[in-house]
Image 1 (cartoon, rainbow, N blue to C red):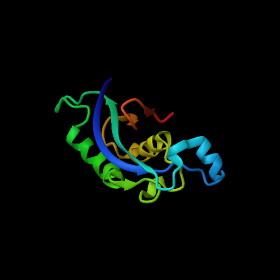
Image 2: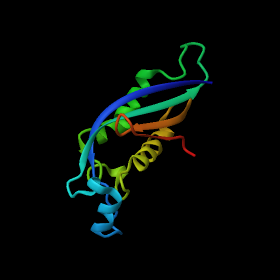
Image 3: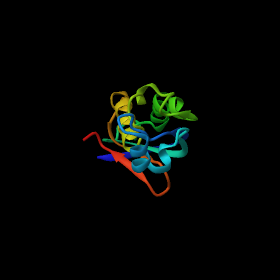
Image 4: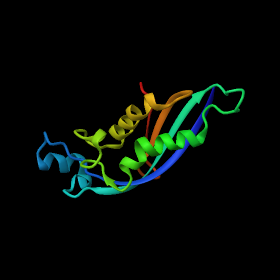
Length: 135
């Protein structure tokens, strides 16, 4: 089994806020991330596909194909957008890194033409990231 990773970078804003809580509870839970305008990040997305190497090409998956899939399905929809309000597949979720990562997995899972989607990693900062493997 070989694991192939494609990394993409995007900028987006989001607000962490739970409508079922009071404003005070949201501030207590999310601190500055609950402000009414939201805040932004330069996110790094890593998509890992695993599989056997195809004999003819020598690839698990052609990285040009994987790049196009990620660009079309995720990046074009999130880059320079507000994740709470402008991204259909993120509507009605609290856009924590955890929830965003799971949503990205769901968008990509059936779109990988060869190999198998192994993991989605989302770096919110250089020190904080989330990884989801569909479990």
